[in-house]
Length: 297
Image 1 (cartoon, rainbow, N blue to C red):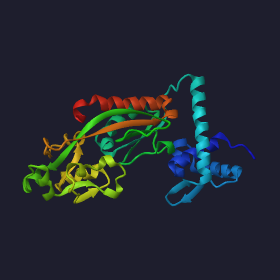
Image 2 (image 1 turned 180 degrees about the vertical axis):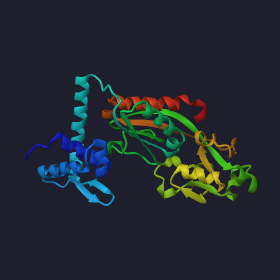
Image 3 (image 1 turned 120 degrees about the vertical axis):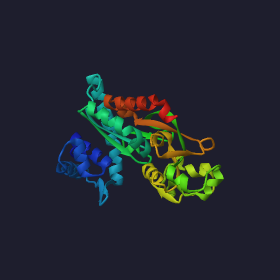
C-alpha cells in the first residue's frame, strides 16, 4: 500500500476542519479540485471512505475519525520539528481563526482585530462571533474565548477577566410602561432573552438568575439581536456593560439590585500555541481585554 503524501494529509485535515472544499482551498491557497484530488488519492491508498458527503458539507466517517487523530499527531510533530530547526516561527503569516461570544466579538474585538490585521498584511484573521462552545480539537477555531473554564486536555488556557452585566431598557420603553422598582415588577414587563433550546451555554441563562418566574416574550439565539430588540423598545433585557453603556438611549434598570458577573476564558490547542502568530494574537486579545478596566467592570 503506498504511503500517503503529506500534502494529501494536509488537505484531509483542512477539509475535516472546514467541512467545505472552497473553505479548505482558501486556507491552503489551492484550487478546490486539488483538494478533491488529494482526498480521492487518500481514500484509494487506504481503501476507505473518509468523508460522508452531505449537502451541509463533508463529515468524517469512522475511518476518517481514526485518520484525523493520527494525522493531527503527525501535524504536531511537524510543527515541533519546524520550530526546533528554525528556532522560532518568525513571521506573522497565515490564518488565525478566533471563536468568541457574539457580544464580545461585535461590541469589542472586531474593531481591535481589524486594526491588528491591517498592521500585519501577511496575517489573515477570521473572527467567528457566535454564542456556542467551540471544539478546538476539531479545529472549529484556533483560539477560543468562552464563558466557562476550559476543559482539561491538550489545551493551554487562561482567565482573561470578569465582566459585569445588568438589565437595560430604552428610554422610550421606560417612559411608556409601568415603573420598575423591584425585581417582581419585571413580571409585568416584556423580557428579552435567549431561546432556551438553542442556548448551549448555561452561563447565558440570565433571566432565571434574576427571578425564577421570568420568561422571555422575545428571544433570540444571539446577544446582538437582543441588543437591537431592547434598543427598539421591545422590552427589558440583560446586556454586558461594555456593550450597553456606550449607547445613549439605553438606561440601566435596577442597577442597585440586579448585577450579574461572568468571566472570559481564553484557550488554544497546545500544539498551536508554539506558533508565534497564535501566541501573538492571544497576547493581543488578552492585553486589550485586560487593559479596559472601566469598560468591563
